[in-house]
Image 1 (spheres, rainbow, N blue to C red):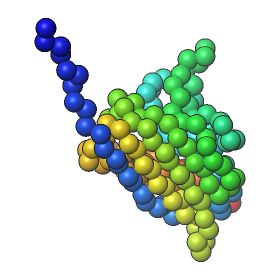
Image 2: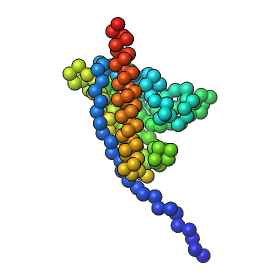
Image 3: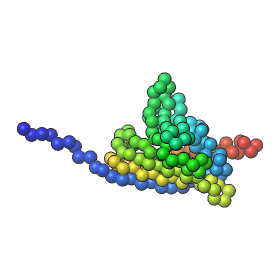
Image 4: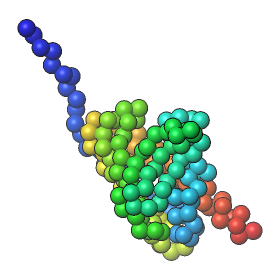
Length: 162
């Protein structure tokens, strides 16, 4: 009897790191990061484009998840480290939809440099990942933080000053 062999799955590691400077106080960036996520999170990065919210529970053991309503949704991360308003560390699963399956850790650190808050992101994913997945991860975070968060917070600060 010839027993079928399971398909070979390539194991890899993807690492992404970058910084984005945001012309806003650190406390304001933190608030947007953990409380106002749906105001800047691009819906193209939601598993359900009709999600009611993208929720960050800013506490140790908290969840980061899409709320689809009526108890439905998808959990992206668990909060494994938090130091408000300085740092947030997450661990989660990269779904096959986004190139996985893979396990991922994300660290977000906010620091003041001059008159700006610098958000430093580092992510390491390991599992079914390759250079293409790494490129996708980088592009996604850059879109979310440079186009989404940065634009949102800077516009909100301008409105709040006037």
